[in-house]
Image 1 (tube, one colour):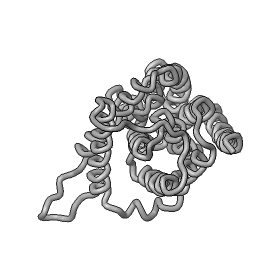
Image 2: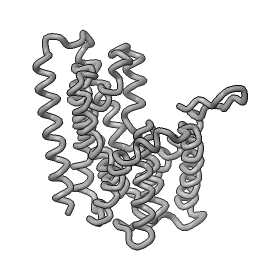
Image 3: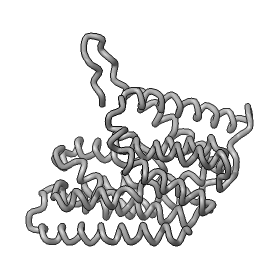
Length: 293
């Protein structure tokens, strides 16, 4: 079953790569003037930290804006196209290296993908402000449990590599929702880490599940931007090339970390993301309709 998952992902990514590289070389004479070393550096840094579970989109936007490397208008397409291959590489590496019960892996990946596809229209109408508030509080609550477990104040998370019964149902339903929330800009990584811990699974198992969930969504989104030409070709290629190197280096760090240190890393990421989500909650003004963002 895992082989089938990777085969399907490989085919999707191969089709995307053909579109991307063909479009890049057909337009190689009209690329931006941004220096290659800057773009490669951004790709390396952001996908290095993405492999650690921190995410790549927000850091990329920040670095691009600081360096004035690309146009805001093409930013969404550039992010999706440029990070697709590195994220797929992450998924391949972690799915092959870290044991996850095949049915659990397949159902959780499938539910996130379906959530992004089926529920996108519904979620886009929800108050994102409140989603961020609830999720931010939930993440900090789970992080508190993780810290308590690490300090011996209460039982720590489990070592399970698969789910059964009601836990599997909960995992599928929640990951479906997380996949849907991705379509409104709420990242999946930290919430997925928190879900894995809450269901009693090993923190290490979060990596193939969260990377795979994102990897299945990105090739299709990337192809859409390539077809429309709505992306910065040079910036995307720089992200891809630098990102692949960053992924490979970070992967060996994550793979070699003792479970105790990995749990602290995951806890830190969840706390960081929870605080970030709460800071992004916009204050509702009583004199006018609440702005969603």
